Image (spheres, rainbow, N blue to C red):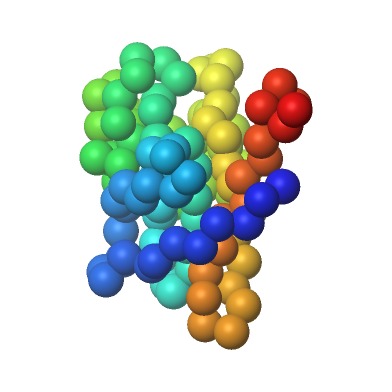
Length: 105
């Protein structure tokens, strides 16, 4: 896993960040960031245009919900989104991204 620095948004809510050429979705609530993939697996919607409700990231197209900690979709959806580990060191925030094995060599 490679840790990449990112900047917290100025305000809480759901927004987009770019890390290592990858578009990600950041859910920033109560001073805690959660980072997920930015594309809904159901219809390809941009999840950074969605909202957070009860610990779930809600897709702006079809209102599929995803747990912001596990990425698991609501019961009956049969889908999920990727979640990424986040850490803070000395006031700097980092997100961990695993490189696919075929890009390591």
